[in-house]
Amino acid sequence: MASLVLLLGPIRVGWARLGRIMWLPVVSILVGVATVAVSISWDAGLRLEVTPAGLDQAAQLAVRAVAATLAMFTLACSTPMIDLLSSLRHARIPDPLIEIASLIYRFSFGLLESAGAVHQAQEARLGYATRSAAMRSASMGVAVLFLRSWDRARRLEAGLAGRGYEDALRTLEPARIRSTGFLVSSVATLAVLAAGSLGWVVLR
Image (cartoon, rainbow, N blue to C red; front, side):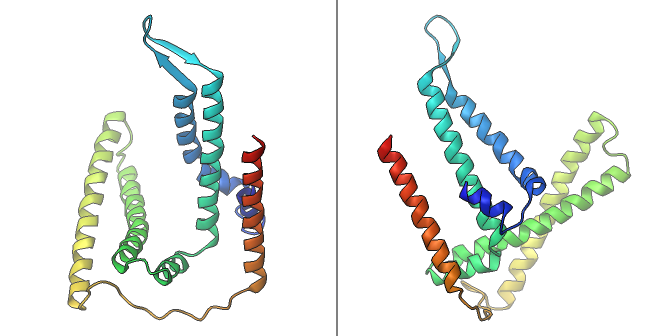
């Protein structure tokens, strides 16, 4: 609930955008919940059963999964990636792990841009006019994306090696001003959530 309030309130994601980014995780969660709620027995052939214990476990799983997903989206929608990487470096996370995360993040946008360009080019050539043509175009598009990603990674590796790269690329960090009010409110919110969760577990 707290993540939902933050997303729709201060972060200003909006219901429409939240629905667009949440529908795929929700579908995945529903599939997992369904497998937990329905039990299979082979005593007298294949038999599907829905028990109260299974429903209770499925409900708990759904609540936790949705809460974790909303918390992840709250972090992603409110904190720039550069700040996350900087925080990881201050937390003494090994530099190779941070660089891998940074490269994956940057490559994702290039991959999406390339995928969009390939898809538009195939549509302009009626590559999705029929089912067989769509399957052929999709397979060719994946192959092109793989080759482009491989070539881009190879050129990046050569460029880094030419600059004497070993473990990390150090860059200047901009000066940041800490907000005391924000820190206090964040700690207070976390304390309230932790106390409420602990109280709910004890009362159960």
